[in-house]
Image (cartoon, rainbow, N blue to C red):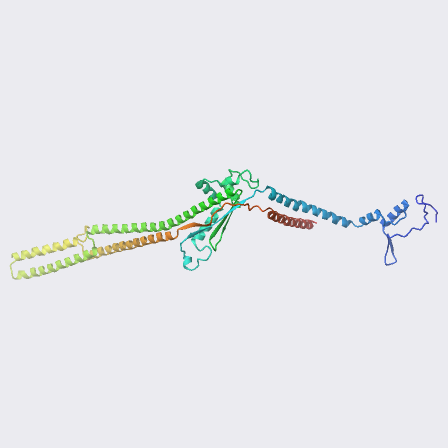
Length: 442
């Protein structure tokens, strides 16, 4: 072997190297040396230290360089923490800052009322009045509930009471997120109005609970009073309209039957004028009796006339008198038959009397039926008026509006906690979706 000396550490190539822990001894006969250990050994040999490489900063650097996964995990932890702070803590902090420092306090006025009346429906008669919506008051309460939450009530309050609800929500001290323009169109004000009012209807008790939110106690009280007054006006209008419809239908039926009765009476009067009699049936019977009596008398005279020529002369005054009597009775019979009608038919018979009697009976029946229908319509009108008086409804206010003495909204701690939960769960869902999409693409 060549005795060559290293000028740096005065070691020859024949000098044995101390064994180090970098040598990996396996259970078998094979020996393996890490390449990183060789490089470290060479650097150590050149430095002339001759110390164990596990001592000092070098060992720590070697340890860190051999575990890159720990660095990645630490980096991911820091990135996750930054994301939580950025997407959860920061928005929650902003929400809390708004509710604690910026949001304007809100005052609530609560009132309770119900639509009451004494009407009875068909469901009440069947014993089903306890069912929700089984009475007219329930229907009116639902109408009232929708009316309070609509823009129509704000328009009616402005037109009928001269009170502009928008002015209460456009004051300068209200925060920008809750303040509106004073001249905001009512159609655009509807959504804001629905957020400032809460209406609940209890189907069991029939009570309606109305809560009004405003930014001053007086505004909340004024708005609540305006709602109560307008609700009373609506209930009275619905009650009046219901009564008018009910009575109007009955009055229309009375007018129709009255016109029908008048027409039947006119037809009967026209018939009586044409027949010149008040009762065609009795008149026909009288005419028949008169004609029958005249015909009996005429038969007797004709019989006597035929018997006399055998005992007296033809120019006897007796025969002349009989002839004149027979002629007079025949003319009387013709005259009696002409009294049946005013037509041009001069040879009326019993068949004409039967037709006249049938027409009279038909007209009399129509008049009688029209008279009975008219009387029934009058009774229905009286019943409708009585029912209308029973169906009269009114608004009964159980808890009137009162001036609030403290602010109830917003609740900063509760609202911030709820907002934080929503933000946190939203971030979790978004992170899960993002990771799922990323894994799917990879």
